[in-house]
Image (cartoon, rainbow, N blue to C red; front, side, top):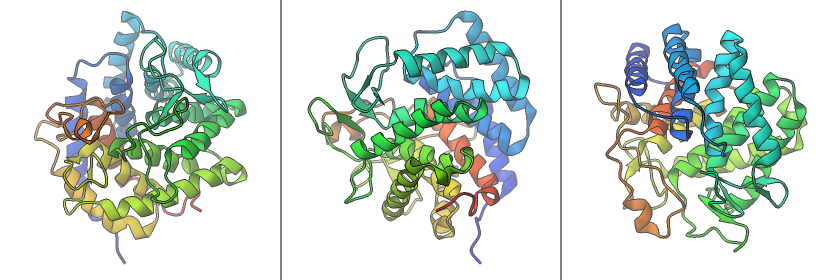
Length: 349
């Protein structure tokens, strides 16, 4: 019987190094920090190592004391670690900020069409009536977690609505792959590329729904989500490279292999719990471990990427520097590997 093939001690050591390196980064309150600290929370939950929780709590408290920036879809990514901290400590300062983020998303954030969240990165109207796959991690996933945690069904419905419409706007039914963004004013996908990390945001968050939402199968939108995920993963498995990774433009053999997207896609496979994906996960474990430096830096992670104008725009994004989203998604992947037995068959359709 095929099983995940990994050395638990090696994985835990790599996670320990990554957490320490991540906490040495000078990230402020925005989405890179939100994804990174989500990963540290996932590492804590997978290993039970309370030092991870204590380290991130100290930093989050420091950031709160320095004052928080304007609310945007992107800054709501920090809500993930706040949910973990509130669950573990019960401190009301975290709940207050969580509520502020939720009030923003449900009442003040820019929307279009069927109440679809417009992707925002600043207090300005940066991308009028555009939806990006990134929003699913920064906002929809956060709203779902909060809705279940605080028994707020309206948040659950809003989150599921975001997935439903992002699927309609961004997934190509013929290929199963996701575009980076959609412009509702122009009615197009702009440059129209299958960006790796966009597919990571989509797959990773959709794979979480079954594990977060009780009786998920009773929600019609969930059936859309699981159908979308099944199609996407079936397509993605065919695009994995010999090194166990995925490219920054998934179907472009001249694009470089990109590790944050690879980690998120492989984590989605782990969360899905389909045994047919084990061989792809085994390749990904090896490939991602080979991209962790001795001091815990996740290497070959592309920089922050808007919906670029052309193929060269994506190909030429630098992958030289450490990035919070690379740290966070690699930690989330290794956490999912350690927890894999919990996911096999859980809520799968």
